[in-house]
Structures are given as C-alpha cells and as structure tokens.
Length: 464
Ligand code: ATP
Ligand code: MG
Ligand code: MG
Ligand code: MG
Image (cartoon, rainbow, N blue to C red):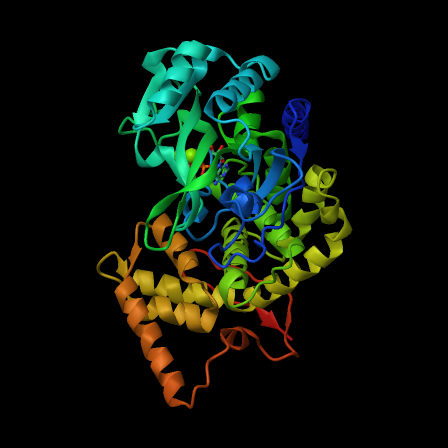
C-alpha cells in the first residue's frame, strides 16, 4: 500500500465507525501560546477535551500534519540518526469526546491493525501505564493479547501535549521489525534502538494539568490516539526505516540528483528529505524564515538542510528544487502544496541565497577552530561568532560538531550572548538585527561556491 492509500484506509475505517472526518489544522496553533507548533492530532481539540468548546460530533478522525522541532516534543536532533523520527510527519488519529473510552479505543486499534491492515499479531507488543490495570485487563481478557508481550511503564505511558493541558495514561502498540535489527522490547534498556518501533499511542484523556502541576479531572473521560503514518507505511511496505517508504524514497532520489551525489544511503540525504517537508508545510502555514520564535526554528531547519547538501557537494542552490517532488508526492491530499508551489520555492531560494553568502566563510572559521583545538569542546566565543556573524544557529554548529565528535561550550556561548545583550542595552535599547549581518550589499550576486578539499580551507567564491 502506498502512503496515501494507508492514510485513506485509516480515515475510511473510522469514518465507517461513526467518526467525523476533520481536516488537519495548521502547523501554527490557533490561539495557543503554550505550543510552538502543532505536535499531535489532539491539539485542535484541546478545548473540546477541556469542556470549553463543543462540537456537533463526539467522535472524530483526522490525519494531522505535525512538526516536532522544539518545545516539549523535539525530534530535530534525531533526524538522520533514527529510523523513525521526522521533524514533519502525519499523525493519524481517532478521538472520542466523552463518548467511548478504553475498551472501544483498544478494540478499534486492534481491529484496524490486524484485520484491515492484516498485520501479523505475533509481531505486536503493547505497553500500558503502571497504574492502569483496567487497560491491561482489556488487552488480555477481551482481545486475547498474550500477557508476556505487555510491559507496564511509567513516564512513557503518560501522554501530555505540553507542560500544561489535557493529559492521561496511555497504552501503546509496538511492532517488532525482527532479529536483524538491534534493540530490545519496550521497557528494556536498549528499547530505543529501533527494533521494536512504537506505532500507535492510545491516550485515555482524563486530566488537565495546570501550570503549578496540579491535575484536575476532565469533565468527561475521552480518547485521543495518534499513529505515525510514515511508521505504519514502513511496516506495510516491508521496510524497516521510515526513510525507505515510497514517499521518502522519491524525496531522497531527488535530493541526490539536485545535490549531485550517488551516495543514496548518506544520512545527509535523509535530513534533507525530512527538512523539505517541514520547511514547505511551515511556509504554507504562514511561517517565514527569520530570527525569532517560529521563524527562527524554520530558519534553523532550512540552514541545516542546506548545510547537509553542501556537505554532499552541492555546488549551487538546490533545496528549493525539491518542492516539485514534494508536490508530486503529497499534493493530492494537500492541494495547498500545489497551489503555493512557486511561493514556497521563492521563499526557500531566498534563504538559500542569503545563507550561501556566509556558509563557506563560516565553515572555514569552524574548520580552523577545530584544527587548532587541543580538546574536544568548541569554545563558546567561536560558537557565538558563528551565530552572530555567519548565521549559524547553535544547533547547526552542534550538528557539525557531533559528526566530528566535538561538543560545544554552551555556558561560554551563553555568556558571549549575554555580553552582546548588555552591549546592545548600553547602546540605548538598540538590538541587533542578526538578519542584517547576513546580508551583503545588494550588488553582490551569488553564483556558486566551491570547496577546496585537502587543504582544510574553505573559500567562498562570491563574484560580482
Ligand atoms: P517515540 O517514543 O518513538 O519518540 P513518541 O512516544 O514521542 O514516539 P507520541 O507522542 O506518542 O510519540 O505520538 C504518537 C505517534 O506519533 C507515535 O506512536 C509515532 O507513531 C508518531 N510519531 C511521534 N513522533 C514522531 C516523529 N518525530 N516522526 C514520525 N512519527 C512520529
Ligand atoms: Mg518522541
Ligand atoms: Mg514513545
Ligand atoms: Mg508515544
């Protein structure tokens, strides 16, 4: 089954079980200052769970676009390294607003996975919250699920959208990708190694957590579930990693073409393929690269992707060229992607041009610093200079450092940043627009960059 077909199978199954199809909401949460980006299907229903809003339906189903690149759920650093994490992904979810509870939620999930999708039962594992005997009993006695494949966990089975808001114990379904992949079952010390991959989280929404940590019961117990579309697609397509599914293979192939490499297994290609999705969908939802808040997160994502392309040898602007492939892959379900294609391309191209002007110089500074170093910690003032003068977000520097087994002197960086703030305060409240430090004079046109390898020196070829 193609990824798009799986999405539709999910929506259709819950639709036929009395759930209202609700479109994905924007990645920029409406009126929710507690949340950086939409990170789960339940976000748009937060007030319904809290009893502050009512809807003409009490069961819903959606395929929600999500970004986890900051805030409570942040997977940015995982991308390229794990088989299962993206910054942008689609979360398939069914919801009950005071209608059904644990029993039906578990039954629906079981039926959809084992009957509709035909997953082999013996490959599935289940987790249940340590306090939740009721859910375990339903799995064992009503579903007939073997007790030896159920683990009772604590934090991993308690879901919360952020530091405040609706939350509750959960029960999760995992899939065993088989002995050829290292890793242990959920709850074991090496459960993070991607052999047993979490596919579906069934949250039994019962509380509202307030800022002081207090939990008050919700007006009506409810259900919120989330299954990663790309993870279930990997299983159904017989591959281990999300990055091997149809959609990602198409993006990776295009990425390889536009950067001019044949190293299809390079982690940088996975990063680029991942980041084009978060970039394009954030732009669709009104975020533009910039220096604050959401805009800065987008800039970091874009610059990271561009740097990875550069690493693979890209010698001209490339990132914007991937929008066409994304449109071909996802434009059917997201018509806004096709409609806004040229706008998205322009935004990306602009950022690529701006960053290209300083990327090589910044890499040169970093390489020099690395070559001159005794230890394995990059000094804070270097990290700050890269940020301040060359537009290298700290996590970009960290990304490069990590590849070479260096770490960053974060306290030193913070101190340099603080000193900068003090200086701008003394200057009469004038704050630096970091963006302007990245822009060269308007006469300069970027025509390409080249890397002189071997000498360890990188030069920027900025030609008039
Ligand atoms: P993990 O433990 O693998 O990081 P999670 O427990 O953080 O996942 P949940 O918050 O429970 O994830 O989200 C529900 C579902 O969304 C997960 O079971 C998974 O299928 C999917 N999912 C979560 N994070 C990601 C991600 N970064 N990329 C792709 N799918 C994801
Ligand atoms: Mg996670
Ligand atoms: Mg988890
Ligand atoms: Mg989970």
